[in-house]
Length: 494
Ligand code: GLU
Image (cartoon, rainbow, N blue to C red; front, side, top):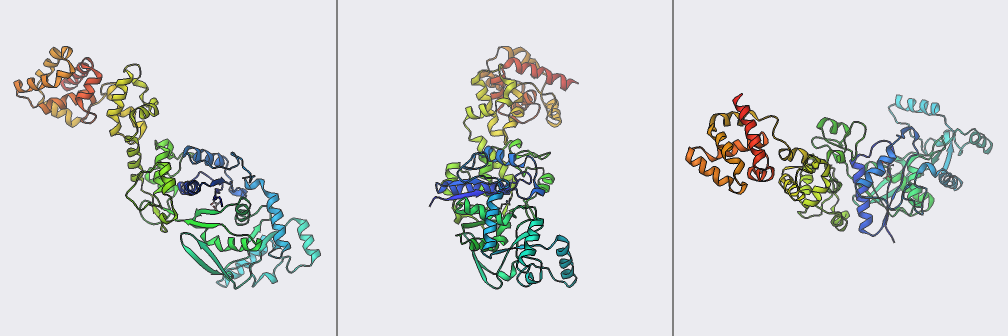
């Protein structure tokens, strides 16, 4: 049987990276088994609908290069893929459940239920709408046909699942094994709301069945609902799919689930793309390959030392046995490390092309060949591609300011005769011979070669950082070097 998976986000805000990891695992599992992934938009809770969230989900999956095979956008044979467009499907199915005695209409008003809840609370109990009380309440099990029809005509009703008490419900999760619970711990869940829309539970089960889903991979927050979902499958006489409930993504330190607030406080992204004032992984400069790799390893490991995976390698390696049951830590430093790793193994030409906007200022001034050399010098020094501008700045202009400490040192230790030597020799010294010429001069003057090199670096970069000094000079040329040395001299003299 072809494996069919689904990612079923609710468009209630930006896709959190926990959701994105779920999407990734669904994708990997499907591709590993030559199956398909469905993207279903679960938008039946209109009070939580957020404009733009659906587009955000599409854009994030597209950027991550893990597109669904079927979706509201991609089409497919099992649509519509937006739950708000499937109302008739749910109505048909709910009628069937009521007709077969597995569900019933309930007419209690929200106020009436509130009174019951308050009374239970006053006694230190929790009100549960179930077999123990349903016979005393206002529903189609107790009302006459006429009364029922009146209520139905008024439109003020919900549909509840009729849970048989005291039966053992067995559910299976591929990661956590078999779980058995007593049905008396469940309530007669609302399946269809008064607004005529299905609840998540009902729509989810109906759609997973009708969309021929074979494996459900979702967050562990849904594990407590699994018994209810199983009862729904049983009520319809359907076979349930396989289930995998993924552990949470935890804060980088301390207890609890990673939240938006953690990102704001820690200054790191928790969303794939920008959302309002929150920067996304993409806009921070992460490659989609890196975010995929980073998410893969929060909650899964291949049992080897391998940390960097191409998409093909992930698909081949991904397996339920590598999933962990406990929460996975969000380690932003690891994400940074991975981005640097990825960036550093990019072929030069690819980095040059991908980073073209950050190298604009150098274009025209350098040949393509020289530009590639400049990129090669910057490559080991950056984590994010946008850092190319700063990392290649010394090839564009001399420093506008100088680090104080080395400046003082140069002022104290570099003889003024050095500047005279530069004036006399730099214009006609070949870069290839420059180092040897400087060494000879140092010996004659009794000046440390290290001091001279630091002087040159300071003149070129403004600090003691940056690529190899001679490599910079080879690219900017001795004429430019002399200009920068003159500027440094002025700064020292003032
Ligand atoms: N719409 C649910 C959510 O966004 C999906 C849960 C599921 O995958 O079953 O969390």
